Image (cartoon, rainbow, N blue to C red; front, side, top):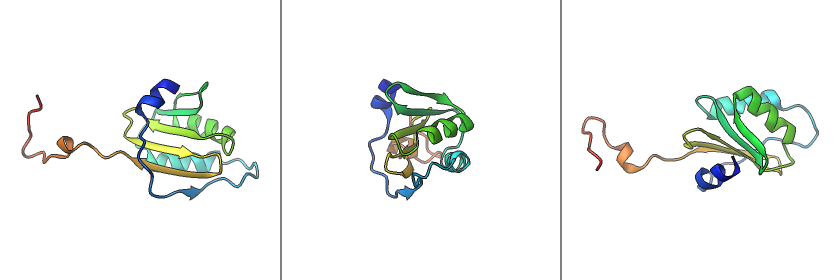
Length: 116
């Protein structure tokens, strides 16, 4: 998982960060699951807590894993296509974004072009 995230995780700079964790230790699982469902269309999600913890998980599994490590690690989340991303940072903030499709994919569907 770690090598896959290193190769494919977007390096774009997210526009907005949101305060998500106050470090009080309260269970944030439901709020995390709601956040993930808002920013990701479908399961499974690729989650990397750190080099040896992560996996391909459902929304509920991902939110439980993230809640367990929230405010202790920089947690990366991506969809399988690596077009949607989120980071839960160790300082308690989070952000999510989508990678822009390449221009040849954004071309008008009425005039398809052949890619060779």
